[in-house]
Image (cartoon, rainbow, N blue to C red; front, side):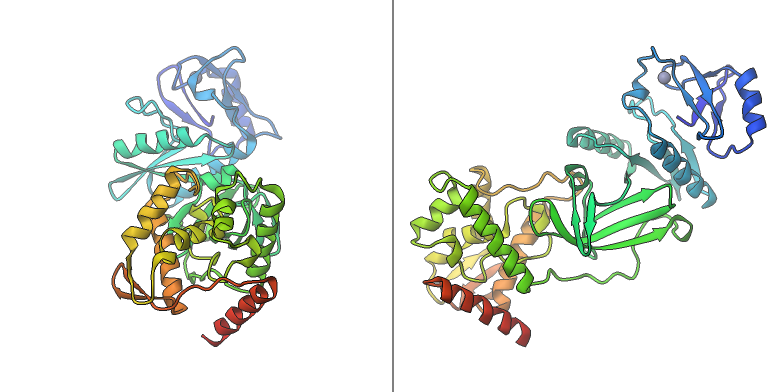
Length: 395
Ligand SMILES: [Zn+2]
């Protein structure tokens, strides 16, 4: 930690301290205490280190449940000084006894309180939610900043995300599903926006970084263009790959999606191009779009004749029921409102409107305009995909 108390109860903050001689003197002459447990703590400083306080090895203070990494300390220090420079009222590691929480940084902007949590190591979703709710209850807006990059690996425009990354995803109208982080060694904020999964771990997205010195609070991406999820030959290829794996690795008599598909006398290779389309916010759903879009057809659309009506509510109820039987799984994303699940479904129906399968006669009420036809053989399936992509180019 970067703060401790003196014997007189004064808060001592090491964040801005650069003077080695001064630190050496403090080390010899002043005894510091932990603000949480009141135990004596040791001032550690040296040429290789960020000056900080640490507990005795034997301590079981609640504030040291997780060992603090160098990255965490440096990041916290950078963000603290960054906020101080913007002339906010800023507190480092202030313990909030009523909440029993100690945010890395607490600050006030125009009468509004914010708590910065700079998180460098995985944290359970339960704890994440608990802390967020704790702040909300006391009218403090939490700002969770991930330590490190907003992805695990990167190859061209593809990124791999871990569960830790997924748990930090936020949603916004402007930039879709987004992750943001800070790396102290380069002093950059990183953004991965418009996140759209290709498989359970591989995603596409737009990566941007902005120097700490060029950013002021609130931390926002400016000048961004919302990108539509691309429907292209690459997506169709990936979809076929996914379906092939499904056939190989799933037990056909146990997999509810395959059972339903075979019961309709179809086959995973014989799905029409409009089943399994990418839509915005589809990352909120862990289940592949092929599956949930097939269920929309299976549970709602296939019963309709041209001219028949169907409401968004009916579709949503069908999805809810599939959710209950765990045929469709949504991701647990503590920072994304569940309303984005409905948005994703609604956007899919709008895609069907776009391709003239449905007509939206009034908001949330659709009429079947054209039946969705399933290809009869592999040749036809590939031809359907090709024609669909061709039509896309024309639109
Ligand atoms: Zn302590």
